[in-house]
Amino acid sequence: MIDLRILRDDPELVRASQRARGADPADVDRLLTADVNRRSAVSAGDSLRAEQKAFGRTVGTATPADRPALLDRGKELAAGVKEAEAAELAANQELAAAQYALPNIIEGAPPGGEQDFRVIKHVGEPTAFDFEPRDHLALGEGLAAIDMERGAKVSGARFYFLRGVGAQLQWAMLTLAVNKAIANGFVPMIPPVLVKPESMEGTGFLGEHADEVYRLAADDLYLVGTSEVPLAAYRSGEILDLATGPARYVGWSSCFRREAGSYGKDTRGILRVHQFEKVEMFSYCRPADAAAEHQRLLGFEEEMLADMEIPYRVIDVAAGDLGTSAARKFDCEAWVPTQQAYRELTSTSNCTTFQARRLGVRYRDEDGKPQVAATLNGTLATTRWLVAILENHQQADGSVRVPAALRPALGGREVLEPVS
Image (cartoon, rainbow, N blue to C red):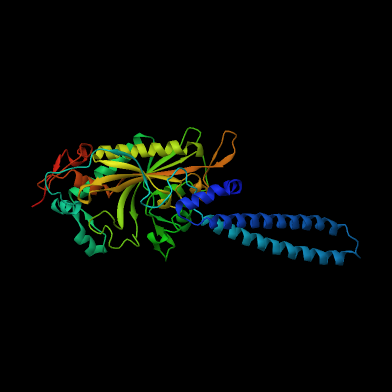
């Protein structure tokens, strides 16, 4: 949730953020009203409680003749306090609902929707072939690496088996990502993939995109779509020691997404599926360090893409395409030859203090006072990367060249040959 002090000091900044997202600026005024009402209710309750306390002292010194009237007055005050506390509770609930409805305040993201991103840079040239390239599914089937048919038989549409060299490629890629993160000071984590509602709510995933999330109603638990969720909640309610710099974690987990509303879109192959593996970076830091940490995470993502030897571009995602928690997000999009387009492979988001405020994650400043931390996340590798690896490194006979960084984990193999 956003800092109410910013809302009170500069409501127009928050309205401008809403307009840039294509969201309703009236939500800002609803929160302002709720904030005023809550403070008024608290003030009224405090006054009544103070009066009740002072009055209680007079009863003890009253004469027997005065006591009945004073007791009646005491009952009136007690009823008033009870009513005031009910009003406080209602005002707090109204404030929480209005505050949870408001997304994070953008920081530097271009205004507009999905197509209004800003291209920051291109790295490498789009791969060109002197033959008709195959798409990743045709290549994967030829290598006996991807089996969509049996995935659908076992689990339904948009499920798959990675087998043989497909499984090896994924393991190699994800292990490389984890090792890179560890070498840069990240603590490796295997997090739970089922989380409580407060963990999902705290990270901002139960808002407008709640229909993307799998829920186990009988247990009131959610399957995560990213290990960002358990990693953010990992330190909830704690005060961190950030005196020597950010606290960094890297999680390897299975991830689950319903892909609601995407029927008929990217249904071929493994570009948009219900279950996948992902290595996710997560940082807690001081708010003043968040912008620099964001660039650092983006740099790690680019190092991984360079290791995969695939052309890509970096974009500054437009405000209307940001998630609820993100103040700014950079996507790395790889060139996919058969689509003649760049497609998102990885993203990194600066969530400023939005998630930490919800989750109660703080640190101590130079004076020892607790302050709200900032959180950031970034994907270092995921199953979708196999799409770009297979397509960009294919050869005319259907074989696929293995990027040099992945060869040691495949027993030194330089080329994956089709299976007859």
